[in-house]
Figure 1: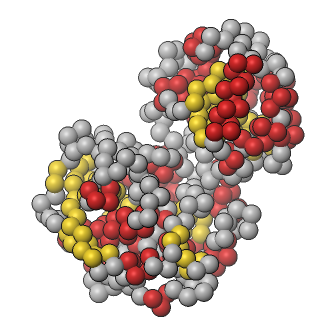
Figure 2: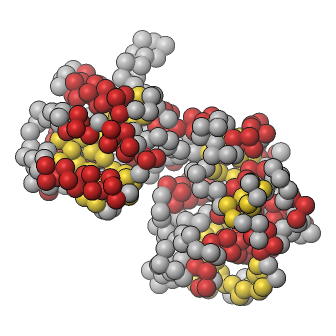
Figure 3: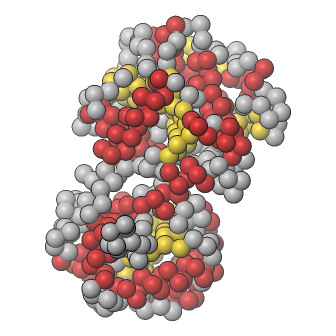
Length: 486
């Protein structure tokens, strides 16, 4: 199949979250399955044509993209994704995309991604390339299904083109005032109370995608089920219910060429499922980095996260004193709300021999925490997929998670048995969103850490699992076929 993969961020060119990881890995895996894939993203300020060997695409040339009747000169740069022959096209408009941040929340955020989506469609037109499927990702690309059905329906190039929308996080919907409708130049007949693109008087890009895409999916089976409920659906649960037969969940994969303790270039000691001795050496190295004394009999608990309510920091705060009273050491990496940053900075002064904190993000340190910690804590309020718990499984770092979204799909609670009576547990989980439930699960993990018969089994159950992108790509391959036939 000929697939246009459209995303607002793609690793390694631009990244704010998991969307970039998906967009950087999935297209290459799809190409290995025989698909012809072309990736499209904006050319943001940090994307260097010299670093990534990008070239101005003379064949596409200059395009005049209209936003509310105003024409914007737009160009395209072309390159190839790293270690791949997959084409990637960068929509170049300095006025909209040469800014310090990928997302700006400025008054013209709607215009930026209206231009991007129209430029993708018009680039495809100029190529004369008729995609079998356009794979859209999140609100920044969610108008494309409607645009090709309405504004560009005159072009037979898209006559048989199917569309798929992947929702990576329903909390971000692209809601703008009614004035945005005229900028899109979409027919006003679609905008009416509770209509396909309207929400509480606003234009809602993501809702438009849910209504007009041929198929919709999200990034884990459990998150797909959760989005059908008022608690998690963020006002779009009814829209998804109406499309329930076309809505599914596919778990994200991980790139084991980057996240693998046997070959990880960021850790001092490699190790494997057959020889875990390097893990304790990494623990020593990590603790030394934070001037904390190593004790093999005390578990080290790691956290790598945005410090926000979505990630469970409110329930961590609920039982903070109790957590600090446990016989455990802590390494925290992340940033977010100032009250949580300050909370952990205070703990460093209060318990210097027990906790190390790094406010910000450090890629090398994130690998070292996964390799050196014994336990990884991820008590999210909601988690569409989550990646760190999957990294933790591979690194023999036992996850303690809240049973939601992708966390529920990847972490089986210790004492869960399969039909053969075998314990398949690879971590510890809790359902109730409370500090009390979190504390109980952390206590369970610490208790079992001291059981030298049980703990290696839990680690083994996690390390043996395969969550590589190959498996996810196979599922997308089947979904593409169902979408194209629709």
